[in-house]
Image 1 (cartoon, one colour):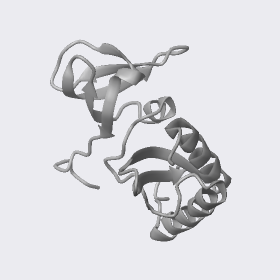
Image 2: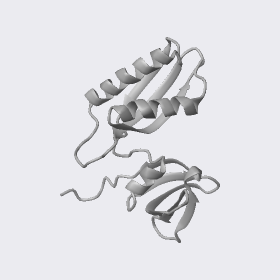
Image 3: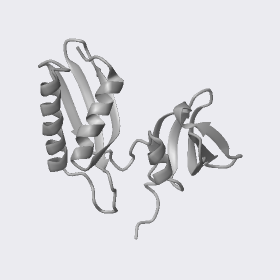
Length: 161
């Protein structure tokens, strides 16, 4: 009943864009009898102090539900969860890596395991990101597709102004 996840993702992206949101992350799970879709959204043009509210999540959820029902894609037994990305937000797409240059991420690298690193830059013309491991070591160039489960790291011990 779910069909193609890539098509679902494209549909969700389009519907969210119409509302001014961007799709940060989508996770599809559950069972064939009851699909569970978890979606994290942010504003397309993120500005400091403009976070996603509960009302934003509700409006996005209603729009997505209407679209799912119109398309008949999920049937009538599904769970949809729409939330903000949070402060330790996922970093999934090239534009996320570009937006957060200079920030620390926790990331699982294919063939290397989990590391904490600073995003140094995104390589022009290629889908590669340059990371500087926290605590030392040489910069490494990684294909964005090989950077799994990346999330921003918040230094909870840093002094607040």
